[in-house]
Amino acid sequence: MVPPGLPTGAAGVHVRAARVLRASDPVTVLSSLPVFSALGLSPFFLSQLDPDVLAGVFDPAAPLRPGRLCFLSRDRGLVLQGPGPAQPVLLPARLIDPDDPLLVGDWVVVDSAPPHDPPVVRHRLRRSSLLRRRAPGGGIQPMAANVDLALVCTALGADLSVRRAERWLALCHEAGIPALVVLTKADPGVSLDAARAAFAALDTELLAVSALHGTGLSALRERLAGQTATLLGSSGVGKTTLRNALCDDPGEATAAVRSGDDKGRHTTTARRLWRLASGGLLVDNPGVREVGLVDEEGVAEVFPEIEALLGGCRWRDCGHGGDAGCAVDEALAAGTVSPERVAAWRQLQREAAFEARRTDAALQRAEEKRWRRIQLDGRARNKLLGKGRRGH
Image 1 (tube, one colour):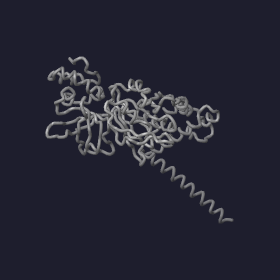
Image 2 (cartoon, rainbow, N blue to C red):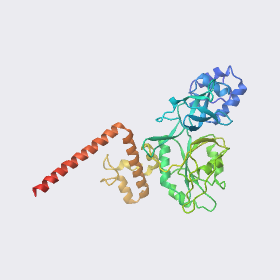
Image 3 (cartoon, helix red, strand yellow):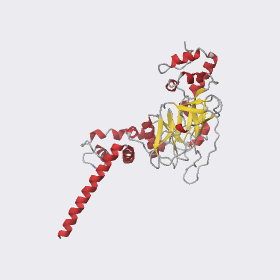
Image 4 (cartoon, rainbow, N blue to C red):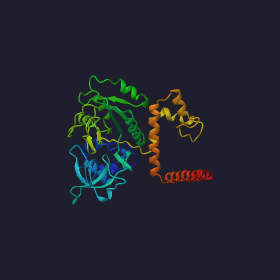
């Protein structure tokens, strides 16, 4: 029989746990398991542990134990395995894969049996979610793993940007991660009316906070309790200040807002997983200047009023940019959709389509064939025009 308090989940977890419990101290079991639950060890991850590693959930002295990566630097890292400080670990070369790297937030199996000092990461568990973006130099850049909630931060004042928030929301939808737009720097006397009006079309949850004055922090802590969240946004929108207000051990300085344009300074330089005073976890990402989309899946969720029009076009292959009978153009002319929203939607669609062609070999071949046809048509046309000139 499995003691009360053991989480239920995937088939087989209770059977394996019961086998371990027969040789374990129940007091140790019941005191250890909530610690791992607080780190996000859900039934999804628990079901991936074989009996030897499962024993490490209950016994801190076991040689094989699960751990959650909270910091990475080349072949070294730090993992959380309990209420104490993060433990150093070594990452073997086979796990340092640039195409599929270990990430902050990953659950791993750690081997601390002698002669491993520091302990060695044996393998990574399957992920429940993966947040990624298109890197400025090309390719896909993973950002955080196993995240339950994304906090899309944008600062009130001159640095408020709905367009950047749209891009972040599209990335979150693509990853299947719920998102909350956090309006930072909501200091006393700052009006929220313009921001609420600007974000009305997004139909997303908004929360205004001021880390310096405590506004909205109680509501945000309640929202984050028991979850793994990540901070997203441009440099200087106040992510580090917000994280310091939410975490048990801030441990990082913040920079003042620049005079003249309300922009802050870049202070976070590496991703790290932090414990929250409210009982959750928070991945703090460095600010980025370019939010490149990976594919088109998330765009539709951010622009539902435009996506709803696409089935009403006259032609099935309508390009939605000047074609006869285009429902999007008709809605623009009628004033039922915002020109700014349509322009943003078209831009994100083009970027996502480009990335899909770049990464999909079949689409690349089709695009190359299309351009070859265009070049051949152009040469034929120029040849005819050249003959016509010589005829004169």
